[in-house]
Length: 190
Image (cartoon, rainbow, N blue to C red; front, side, top):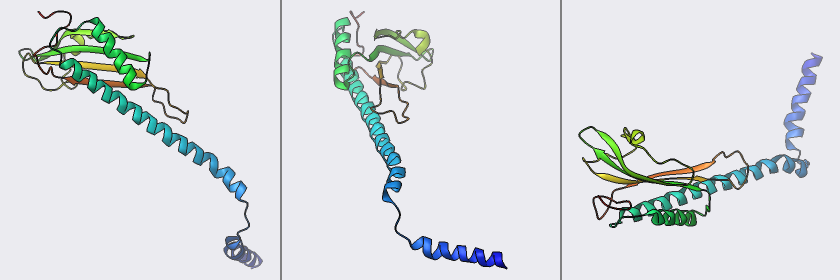
């Protein structure tokens, strides 16, 4: 019986006295909450920056892919050097970008994709016919002998703060049909 009354007194104290007291220390509460709030703010900022950077890379890749698809005269190495420089300028990623530009055509008889040409800038390899052979899930449905210009980019990304965001590389994969000619030629048209 004594234990019940002691327990009853403790519960009454918690319910009445402790719950109504307002003389806590704000500094202790702030010390517990502020690091979490600061981390959350930095995380939101880092995630926003990653999405902004990814969007910037996508827009630049679409712009360059569209520019290449509008060419009616053969393009050369100087043109590709310029497109890489323009991509790095548009995305603020000087010296951190690898770029591969290829023209791929569809062989309807064999139901395969083939490569006309592939040029690279940076530390990646050019596409081969063996790599693009069965890219049915990556490329659009095309008519026989139809071509697309494929632009792929890889850029290093460093988040502004170390908050757990692990995006190290931003990659784009953009394809565009030639606009004014059936084919975009490299060096010379055959």
